[in-house]
Image (cartoon, rainbow, N blue to C red; front, side, top):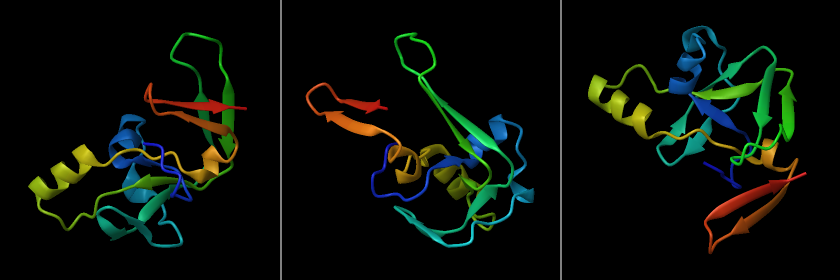
Length: 119
């Protein structure tokens, strides 16, 4: 999800696990985060992260963003019931926030439902 109101980008706990990251050992982000589900704590990947952007039409690599550390992971609180936890994990999106978006020119084509990021 592209969120121009978000200061930071984050992947979900589900995506972190797909990359074999153990979220339980990641430190917490220094501030509380606010979203549609209320206030919560994000974890932080405390080693280098490389985010690669390409295109959907098989063109060569377009842009790479390097985070020295501090990329966020949205983790669901452990004190929820298994059903609540599963529902939140299933419906929580990854977010591209302004920490990444500010590096691009952003164009929204409403009629085609396309978001275009240009360097």
